[in-house]
Length: 169
Image (cartoon, rainbow, N blue to C red; front, side):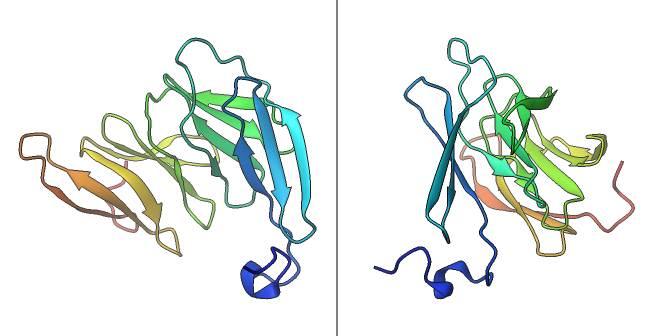
């Protein structure tokens, strides 16, 4: 078992990227772990969680300044330093938000596929395909996700969206 400071594990030289995780114990604690220095920071997540409104995942923006957390009825966008909400996005989903590596887009899987411009959250592309668990290509121009048919037998397939074409909204 190699230590987190092993250069073979970081693959990024001396960049000490934060790893985020959240306490599900009800204390709303958010944690940032820095693998290269083995530092652990904690802070209160400044968002009131009520009832069954809990998140299932979190995604970090390409530049690391924002955290996207889908709750039961909305996606809350937090500042990664202060952990204060910056905005909410009106999408009901239980799937992680996909973030393009170039920082241009986020993809949300909620009653279809929604690709938003990350600069202003305007809709870049939308369709009603039943897809989830997406990831962008390295250049951010393709979105890959697990698609499935709505009717039985709910056959799964690879959903591929090419964002370089004219079909975007």
